[in-house]
Length: 411
Image: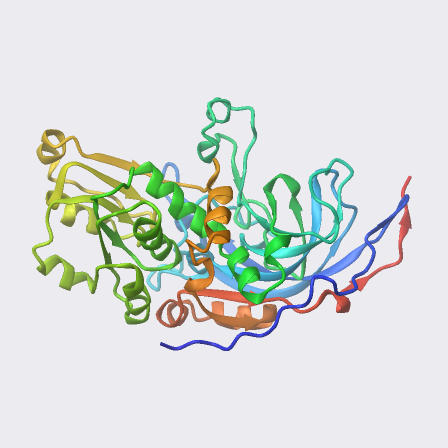
């Protein structure tokens, strides 16, 4: 298996510029990775998704100034940032049309969008309303900014918040040397910051949370035969959780990329290429987790589902789902559910499992690139990234080199 060598992350004790002093605010420059795209909604589409709005994306590394810190935000020097499949889909295009592949909620303003929603960093400063985390702490982040006031939030269904905004897609994200992030997204992981493995694990918490919620939504339990389509980070975490935590009797992983199939062997009873799986007589399947974004997988596997089978759709592609086995679905009381998000306690549970040695969060990491320029180069070849990596991390440079401007008195 091909792996990139790891480079040591900067110590969390490294000296950094002071960001706030009494009534003086330090204005700081940060390098960021930006995506710009042409906005050209497809004609005749009533409610177009991002994959029907944005085309011809361009990835650049630029310098931006961070001004006064919002009272509810924190300023964070990033240590590691994780590259998600959604990030690659923002820059990956349909060669026939030039439109991007990403169908998740996304807004690219004229000045560009700072993408990235997975990572870990060290707090440099906090806004005046922030009480739960202090400068110097290491934090990782949720990626769904919820309103807390809509009917879904009032019912505790935060992953389905009506006014949700997604970090790195609808609000500038984590691909920067220093970033400002809503403090409510943060989780203190200072206890993990004493080792490289701990820091890498913290950077992987967000996709692990998505897999955890999908296992909850499909009620994976002892005795279940589970089939997972896609062995990217979320699919791989789902396999780990089914095997190590939720007690599934069998886990089968279907993945076209050989490197990812090989990685999945550790947490599955068997791995398959796509057509290899459909040629096998694997039946009486209790749970299907579709994490590849290939809706044809669901229609092809549907008649193999056991009575009271459960199917969760995680991977986004914008493709339509077509089912011709509706009678089978009705007769067998099969549950088909969309699964989004990681809110509702998943982070706390995963951190507890990791701390007890039951869930190897950093085991999905197959490589590291250094700095935003390295990330930019990788994102210019997204197909190659999918073939050669499972979870790729970006190690940000030390914050001691960050540039600050003269402090300005506040009024």
